[in-house]
Length: 472
Image 1 (spheres, rainbow, N blue to C red):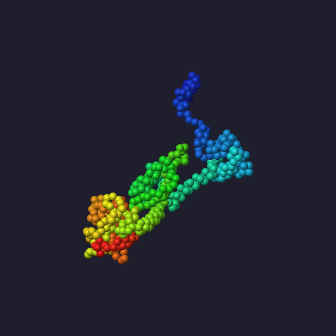
Image 2: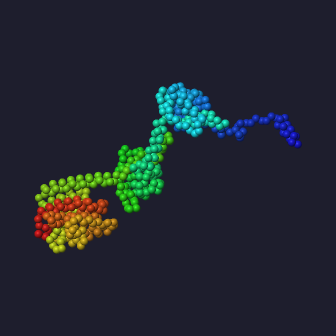
């Protein structure tokens, strides 16, 4: 039965009509639309698209492949390079040809990749130092069938290695802060110095808005990032004041900052990857600079006040001139209260800045009724101690601060006060009060020294005026 089946099958296939030819347009196994490039075309396309220079040799050392990057570096085209035996006579000097061939073809008998550096010749006769990585190409039988070689100019490789080394150094041991900010203005990479300056861990800062760490100054930083992404880096570093939110409270810092725009080197058109932000804390230096400038300004004011008051015939006018010069950049309001010879000691308002509007200190009619300062008033404390007394409304709201000022018979917008004794010939002849509004900081201990210097000069003028308001 099996024989008959075989014979029947043979008859039906062999003795009948011949097998019809396949129509390529109807054959499902032949779809021109699905035909891709051949393996040689694909390999050539891959080689030409590589950023590295690539060439290949067969077992006899004949060049079989040569891509466009190799042509760019050396100037030899693929038509000129493929088919040549080794680099001798065209791509290397004759004296170096044997050594170069030995190094390249030696990769066929060595495991892994072999890295070498040597000089190649360009088509126009120049020399290029290249770094090569070569490895054996195995045939179907597992035996070496050739060598492939990737090479690049050494200075390009060194530039890359330097860039990598610089990045690692910046993020490991730099003595200034480095933060990479992504296109969404959030930190993507932070070095140890920056994390310490911001008061957080390196990993906990990633992806968080800077507004969670800064109470003031975050808008300026984000505006700088946006500008760099759009326009590029500014020509000079910028000094930015920020207020950090810390466990101990708020900390005011000044950071000298530089910015660079980061773009992908692999894209044909610049693609912004974010902003590199480098900064160093210069708070102490800026504070010293500001203190020195402030000291120079106040010394100049004292000098100018002394010369101006020396031209005043009326000692009371000389006192108010001294106070006018002292107010500049120091306080918003000022008062002079003279001592009255009554028991207990009282104070009489002698001069004051105009209420409601800025202007020079105005002398008032002295010899008036003593002020009804409540016990514990800062001016009375100053009179009793013959020293400086500071006072502040603290964190009170606007209404409470206004009541606080009016209760002490000061202008309603006063929030911070400094009272100093005006002394002459061993006695207190009056009290000088400096007042600041809500937009200014409280008086500091060091500022009391400047106020006392002013009060001493005012005290000398008041003592020169003669009898006090009580007629003594």
